[in-house]
Length: 404
Image (cartoon, rainbow, N blue to C red; front, side):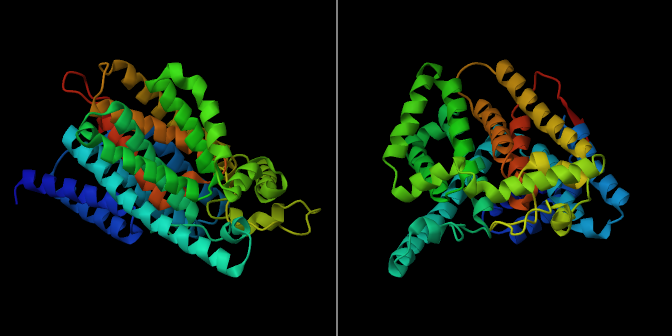
């Protein structure tokens, strides 16, 4: 097989790897392995966006933390996740044309629509079950929400959020979606409805923040209408949804997270440089718990539900600094690229906006969850920013990346 055919096969594999992540993590990882083999066989030069240094330091410090804490074997799940980070150079290398990027994004939109449709069906089943049991829907639904094809509603909602933001960016700034604008608008409405039905408050907050961002970018004169729209939507919402919104400011509804953050602060205070070690936060949680706490509120205590607390507690403050450097550089690079991009609609502008919006979403949702802790969300985000960086490359401009 010729090198060109091998490269085309690798690009097809990268497409399957990325889209399959919305259905099956096993199939996605298998496709990534096949893509790596095809890419190596094609002898195409690998490329890496200009974020190799902060990303390398973050991953390197993970290894240092494990060694320093003497629990290298227990950190194995985090080392295995390094495999997922290969999605970044693979996607950046192979999605090197506007046409390939367009097909990938539209593949995401269709796949996510199917996943959301499954989620809506799951929601209907839960509504009927709550009615049959004669119990309050909010109480019944909170511990068993819709998941689509994922194992948990947080993973489902965060992956759906990234795809939804990419679709909104395409609708506002792209050109290829204009041939079926109303179809894609209908898909966007369905995705938004599905995200609302997840009852994931951190994703709701990200939706509000990114809605304001997109309005400021596309229609800045209409930004003042945003608060009115939010109030109107809340007023028209069902009681269960309004109750969930009110719980955002309810200390009793957030007692578990507050306790995690306080416990994480104690871990950071005791181990500021290397943390307690990868995969050690959960096992050591009770050792750092306030002795006055006699009963834990219902919650998952395997991690600390915030990238700003969990990573420094687990891997040390340097890990958090490297992560913030990485995220900040991504935002800065994409913002600069938007200023260089010719005005008007283009699929490259849409891809850059999608990468920027997705990273902003990680920063918002990351305040309340370990956003990049799930391989599905991590792979999707890495591919999204790879597409954003790839869209910044032009024939007339030197490549600001690294050959591998």
